[in-house]
Amino acid sequence: MRTRTNRIHLIWGLGLLLTLSVGYFNQGIIALDDYSEGFARFIPAQNLSFQENADTSGIRLPFQSLFLLALSKLGLSLGLLQPLSQLRFVLMILGALVFFAHTYCAPRFFKTDREKTIALVLSSFYFILPLIYSRPLIENMSGAFVTLGAFFSYRFFEEG
View 1 (cartoon, rainbow, N blue to C red):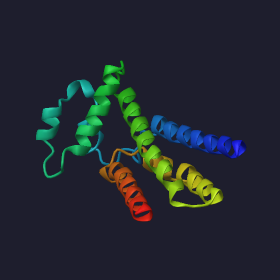
View 2: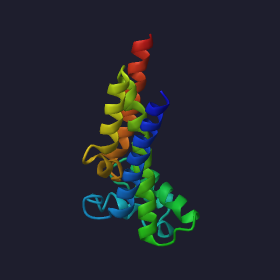
View 3: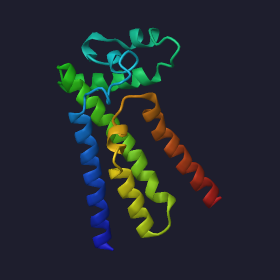
View 4: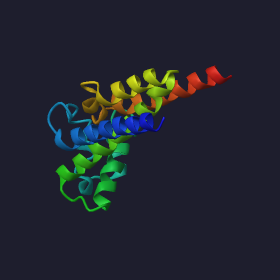
């Protein structure tokens, strides 16, 4: 049992490290393809306000940009003054939050230890997931809540 727990922690830790490293190193077009509605609305944090951000959201709900701006402002309050540092911080935190939601839920949909381990490995290392986890798009951010909602609905109906 102890060996399995160590293996699970190792898989989880390596998956988180991979996700964080993608958030840190990938600032290219694939990470930031929604420029005008994406990172331009939360970087640099020192030049933007929550009110201005909400007022200029247009037809989109301001949740995404306000949440990302809050993360960017948190980075600023921690001493990250450069826009690239703020962007890396936001992508890493976003990636970690989505990673936590998916790796918490995925193994719990299965019964056997082997199935749970496979679900954790796929949630951590499936070839494109670390990139997807750290993208500042509404689809990615809402995916974590959809996953958590599906999991807790599943648990409700399973346990009665």
